[in-house]
Length: 371
Image 1 (tube, rainbow, N blue to C red):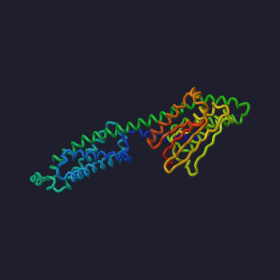
Image 2 (cartoon, rainbow, N blue to C red):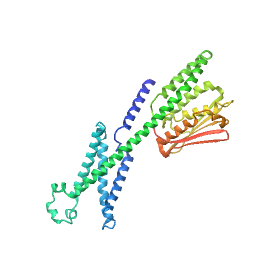
Image 3 (tube, rainbow, N blue to C red):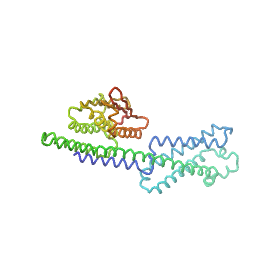
């Protein structure tokens, strides 16, 4: 059953990765919609200012131009959002050309519609004779329509290129974040595997039942670490960390004590980045408890606010000058700090403090429901 669940999870992760690495951004996304409308408003200002600030009815013209450009922007967003699945099936070049053609078609449609609903006398006030020849053929060859299409051709090309570059940049960041998770997984395996196997070997004769349980924990631990999920539930991350602690307790015995406190009301189905807690606990054991003759206690506190989960991991430390000989502490912490920054931006941060023989690492992550 576990193997089947793992296969399903990996399949979902693969589908998610495929969606993230498509050629085009998701035009149904609220952020993309906001950027498109913002670009439209900036373009409206530029077009209106090009006619001069002292021009009569400047604000009226700005309002009309803004309305016109916004209609085109919204039309583009709707069409590209609806046709996204179809566009993803096309080759990159064909998809780009199709997007460009759709954008020009929307501009043509909105331009013709705006000309048709505008009073003819107001539209060609400077050339009354044009009113007599007003028909669809004349509209399609009018200076107004040609100007709109020329501006749209330039702006659409620049905007689509911007959205493409931004989407590829975001995809590259996600790939980098994934590679960092895999690097953490690879870092866990070598020295931890050797220590665990030595511990199991020593238990084989003295305590076969415990050795068997250790093998099961090790198998579950590595099954989880070999997964390719970017997000896991808080329960899954805690289970992974517990398995790691169980293996270390076999080696350190009573020298290692763990105190886990989870604030009441926190949902264990909340989503957290994979391998976000275990590396910090590993550092706490390796750099904090293990070098101490009497060992020590690692405290893991998980609290919450309305929007965030807050993690605090603290452990006793000896002489920091001596402990600097042990490599790897800052690498893992910097890795996690960068992963939090990539995943949540300024909404998450990692703080480190060292005072009165206690080393403390704390971080917060936005709460994500397990949908």
